[in-house]
Image (tube, rainbow, N blue to C red; front, side, top):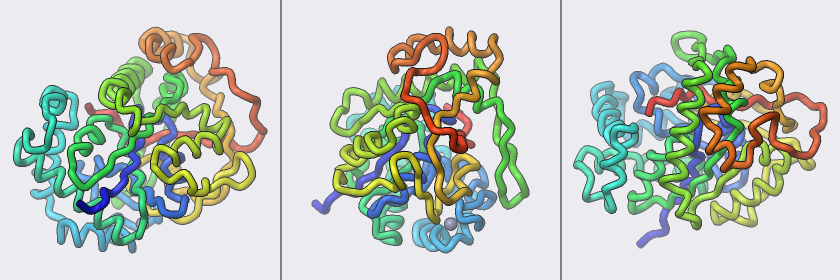
Length: 334
Ligand SMILES: [Zn+2]
């Protein structure tokens, strides 16, 4: 059997820093960051959204050829069929079906077709880029769990966690990015909704992946910012590429050059050197009531991941360089 294609999936809650982490991983020789592949069949997504290079996805010098090879011309009816099959196992209501399936053949034919199409998409991306590892920032733990059944894919999962209070503050901020229909304002959520989504997505990542120690690694965003070189090495080991060189200038500056990332936070359109620094803005800007609500609702998992009930996680002091504010456009719709 031919060697399986490695896919490094970043899973967990939205607004946890997956876009900047994925963009950084995509700078490593042999790695390509595709973005949130789970989202591409959302309604009119491929038609309306822009690649991080600035071009509409279907006109982008990278993605136009990839999608032409995988699906030919864009067909809204085909996208809807794929979306329905995806939702039937990736959304929360499909969890019992997903948990019960030990092999792909136990799932409905439409789901098998969806997995086959996704495999083909990844392999075409690999052929077009020549990469060894595809980085996918899809976040949904159910998506990577489904794709572990794909015979030609080797799924490795980075479970990225960020303090639930910082995530709640990110969901309250106004952000926008360009689409084919003009600027799109990213969705905003209340503190209780943000906490609920944080619990569901992180709890699912624990439930589905935590025991698979050979293919799973828990990474706190705060540790990535405080100790990027050490954290990169943990992810490179997970990806089976321990000799690869992280895109760091010095100890804490990311070197982000050109990329073709589809779906994700508005900051995916940025390139250049980015000094990592802990974003502590939420500690002053998130209202006390919202902070208390989020703390209470997420307390069991906060404690499990080592976050204190009050204040931020204790880490080494950071320089005074500009802050990287991670977030993602992907609203949790499980
Ligand atoms: Zn592009």
